[in-house]
Length: 188
Picture 1 (tube, helix red, strand yellow):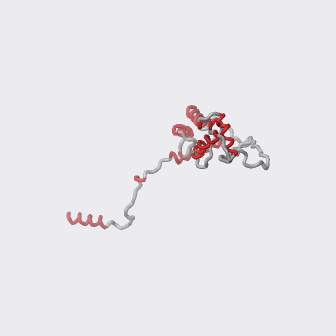
Picture 2: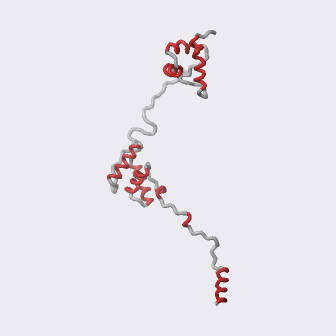
Picture 3: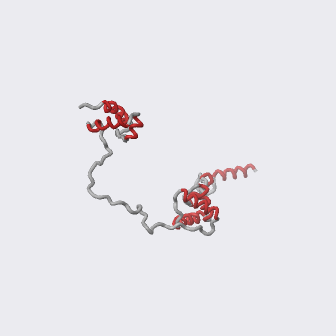
């Protein structure tokens, strides 16, 4: 088996490229190899084909198996069919224009729709938190949230403020206090 000089020159460079990845696969396109190996297009064409023909390299970009059946192209997006999309909602009552505009702008930047379901959820969570819808939407904008949960704004009790008993309560008088009272009577 005699390889052309161009193949002998390119082979070590290709093996080095293959060693860069764990599975030995690399981009063997004309433009990529001409750039990476600093060779001409003619050297590429003269040297690569004999290496592939003699099984020094395997071309994996081809078809692995013949097609057994025809593919059926998708016509609709997954989960979203015609007529199922929720329509965008208008500005709710009690919400300032400034807050609403900021909320809409933020949702659009996140590519998140403002549907009746979204507004219902935010309205319910605001009610649980004891907030107005305007305050909840403002908090969403200020904190750069996508939605609102009452748990996120609930005042959490400080564990240090809890009263802790070190002695179990009892209906009997404390013996230490009784002794102090008795000592005070004797001293008087």
